Length: 176
Image 1: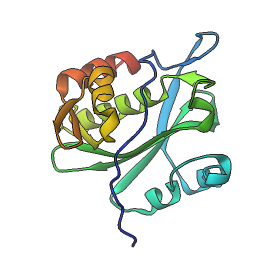
Image 2: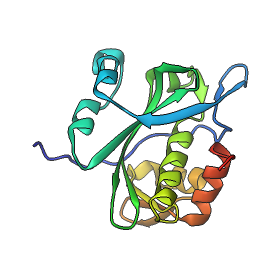
Image 3: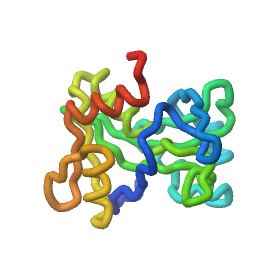
Image 4: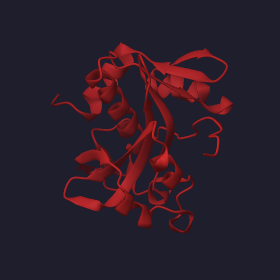
């Protein structure tokens, strides 16, 4: 198996929203997060403007790959996250918004925040008190500290602790 090089995550948290919201109208849409399956991969490739090799992520036995969709519209994937369950926390390997949710002309705000909140929720479900970690691109360390209340541990390692995790979960999953 090819060695996975950790280059650091480079998603930008555009806005912490309640679920995801239409960037033009401001309308909110309820979302659901579910495991990505092999049949989803037909629409997730470079030709469909996805930047990462999600097929490889899905093949890695250590990783769990999840998709974010709008309730009632599970055919259109809004974003993806690849995580690994460590002994005491959840580690985020990759996070990507669909092409139509990136840049200044994006369709929906809140996709990255929603996926990070899901990772925090999963961390609580696994008994880790919401703790997650990830490797950041150098230029985004401050951005994650400001938008996610992530703590810069050193080098490019970022962690989200219980208090920040609860804040994110409360925003995206208020009925839990």
